[in-house]
Image (tube, rainbow, N blue to C red; front, side, top):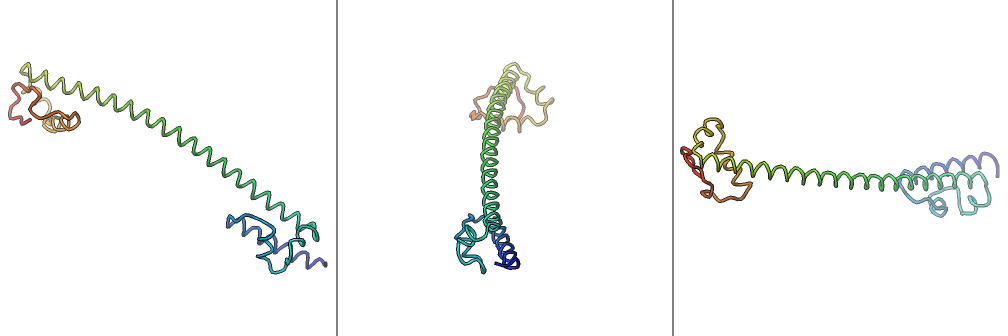
Length: 157
């Protein structure tokens, strides 16, 4: 086989293998032969031309290494994602507990203010009391009218 023919086969093989890697197609000798215009049998790569065999196995190893690295990256990413999700769930539970504590304290303050006649002072201090009451009822599932409000003026509960 002359040098020009060997170069032609080498260049064609490199182009085919690069395309197979780009397409994420598994590199096999049969697939290379199917895609080639000049390589007519697998033995052209495996026995007849050591340079073609070297090119083929270089790309085969390159593809294998790339797949392994990708699999490791995906596994690592999945582990990191799972850890982040667990941390977020823990943080969410902590925030929910703090919210429930704050909400309970808020309900207690409303009740105490109403019982001891401080409702009108609380209303003057806090202009948005009705919205706060509505949100408290919604968050605690309290029925309206069950909270003692004492002397709150014009308060519909």
